Amino acid sequence: MADSTNAAEVVHDLFPFLRIFKDGRVERYKGADTVPPSLDPKTNVESKDVMISPETGQSARVYLPTNLQNPNIKLPLLVYFHGGGFVIETAFSPTYHNYLNTLVGESNVIAVSVEYRRAPEEPLPTAYDDSWTALKWVASHSNGNGPEDWLNRLADLGNVYFAGDSAGGNIAYHMCMRYGREKLEGVEVSGVVLIHPYFWGSEAIGSELKESIKRQFIEKLWRFAYPTTSGCDDPWINPLADPNMAGLGCSRVLICVGEKDLLRDRGWLYYEKLKESGWRGVVEIMESKEEDHVFHLIKPTGENAEAMLKKIVSFINQGKA
Image: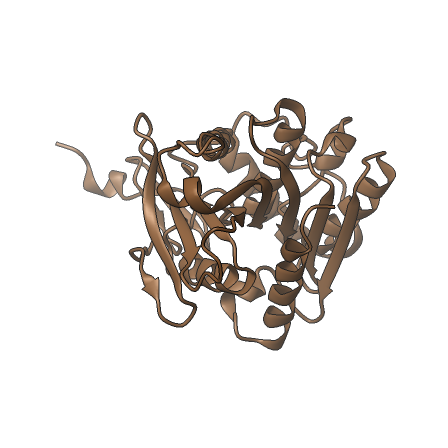
């Protein structure tokens, strides 16, 4: 008979994200709630869930604005990767469902919100592999005969954007780097939006110098999500450690940072280094004053959140460089 007291012992506590018990159970403190797809009356955006990989059970949520001015004109395609430190949240959470409804409604794009498997059940690099699988699924629609009708009829795969926040920003960046190396037949990536991207490094910079406890947590989370990582200068978490920075597979980048976010200085540093890397594109950065990490998801109707949304919409609607 199992010792219930022993089984209830917590062996990892990563508050405010999750904890793991000795018997292997994972309990997430937040980011576990989900909502079904819908026709959202506020934004006139319809959504549905699609299967991407029956082998792994991977799926995604697709969003489509219903008030199309001309159904014969194809729309830009946005591929979005949710955040959550690689360990919590989902493409189907209320937070991301509401945000994608708003973003799709304002920018008039089709969006694919990618669901990827999370650590610790599926440690990194699984999330990266799943995200690339989702992009190959998107590319399967390039000839108009893919499995999803909305993409076949209405998505312009010659004008694709990647975007994500926090860990999702990290994923969006790496998907654009992989696209730069391998390409996807029939797909042209116009730009990438990195919202408060989860980038890091072993040497403290800027405001990090005064935040040793927070630094320790960020590093602990990274090593927890990616047990086989080489550390905090692994190119997966520190893009500056990649000698091929200039291989980013798009011509336009928008980086969003928050003034009070501990990841702020990493965003600014990446902005500066990308410009110096030899990459032949245009990079912009927007800083939201007095705001912390992913504030736009926590208070989406605030003035700064609306300003950031407007900037992202404008970036996408500028089209290809």
